[in-house]
Image 1 (tube, rainbow over the protein chains, first blue to last red):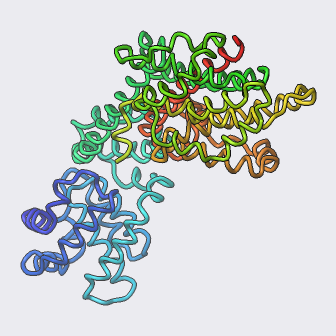
Image 2: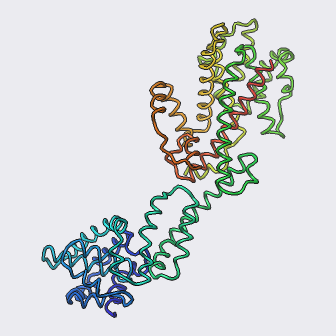
Length: 361
Length: 151
C-alpha cells in the first residue's frame, strides 16, 4: 500500500486528482510525460515494483475493495487483448489506474517481445489503450461485470450505456445537457469514481453553465425582439414563437415583393416621393427629437410637392439631408443607374424628377 | 470577436436608412428596367419581377448587415449561386433530403441562412440580428408599397 501511494502520488499527481478515470486521453498523456520527465526515485520505485512477481505487485497495486484475485488472474494471462481489457476495467474502478495500466501494458509488451526497457513501448501501448477504450467499453461491457462484483463497481457499469446516450444526444440542445449535469451531480457523492469524475464534470459543467447562461441571454434578447414573446416561459415555446416570427417576416417580404411588383410601375413619376416619404417614418421613429426638415409634411402629397421641388433641389435639399446621407449619394451622380433612370423617364417633367431622384438617391 | 459585439442590435437609425436606400436603388433599377407595356402585366412577368424584388430585398438586407454577419454572407452566397444556376439548384433542392433534426433548433437552422454550421449560441445571436434586419426590411417595403399604392 505504501508503495502504491508513493509511486502513484509522486509520479502522477494528475491521475490522483483527476476524475475521468482514464477515459480522457489527455490525462494519460500527462501521466506519461510525468513518468518520462521524473527519472530518479519514482521511476526506480516503479520499476522496482515491476520487478516483483505479478500477483504480488498486483496485490500491492490493488485497492482492497475489489475482487483482487480475478483481475490479477486476468492480468497475468499472456494473451494480448486481455491485459488491455483488464487494465481498462481496473482503470474504471481503482485510484491506481495509471500504474495498473502501465503495468498491464508492460505485461503485454513482455509477452509479445521480451524487451525489458519499455518506456517508449509503454507509451506506445498506452497510446493503444487510449485509442481503444470507447469502443471496448461501449461494445462489450460484459467482462467488466463478470470480473468485478463490487457494488460500487457495478454502479460504474452503467456508465458506458450512459455515455452512449450522451453521444447520441449530441451537443445541440440545452435541456439534455442540463439533464446530464444533474445526473452527474446526483451520482457524484457515493461512488469514488464518480467523485473523481465529478471534478472533471465540474470543470465541464462550469463551461456548460457558462454556455447555458450565454444561451439564456440570447434567448432573452430574442424575446425582446419578438413581439408578444415576453409572457411566454419555457425555451421550447419561445423558440416556437421565434420560428413563427421569422417565418411570418419572410412571408411578409415575399408578399410585399409581390405587391411591389404588381403595383403600377410608373416609377419615374413617384419614386422621389416614395424616397422622401419612405425615409420619413424611419426618421420619425428614430429621431423623434431631431430636427426634421421643415418641408417634410408636404412631401407625401405629390401635388404640393411639385411646387417645392425647385427650391428643394437647389438650396434646401443638400444641406438638409447631408446629415442623413453618406458620401456615396454624391458620387451617385456618375453611376449608370441615374442615366438609366433619366433615360427611362418618359414623363413630361422627366428632367426635374430625375434631378430630384439624383438628390434623393 | 465579431459576435460579441453583435449582441446589441445594430445601430438602427443609420442601418435602416442605409437599408432603405440600398433597397430603393435596386428597386428603382428593377422598376425602370420594365417598360409599362401590356406584356409586363402578364402573370409570368409579374412573378418574375416579384422574385427579382425579393432577391433585391434580401441582398440589400445582407449588404447592409455587413460581411461580419454569418447569415448575411450565407444569404449573399445563396442568392448569387442561385441566380447563376437557378434550375440546377432547384432540381437539387427538391431531391435533397433535409439533414436537420426536426426539433426547434433544427427548424431555426433551416430558417436562418447559414445556420447549419453554427452552435446554438451563435445561431440565436444570428437569429436576433436576422429578425432585426428582416423587420426593418418589412418596414421599408411596407412604406414603399403604401406610398406607391396611394399615389
